[in-house]
Image (tube, helix red, strand yellow):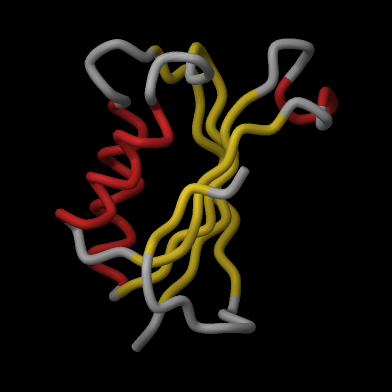
Length: 99
């Protein structure tokens, strides 16, 4: 069964290749969806911004991807990942970086 999680990733995750690294991890973990930098939600991320992602896959793969994102890439620092489980409204065929 398809599972979906909406993620808010907080920390030093902008300008360090985090989105590209996330796309690679999504391919490894058989995840579809999207990732983007966000600067206009200070109530969630603070003044520095953060990364927002929507991930889809099997429950096992989505949970594994969340764990990977909590660790972060080698040159990022992840302070917190807020996870909101959702019912999928659309099905993504691939994982993409949204501008």
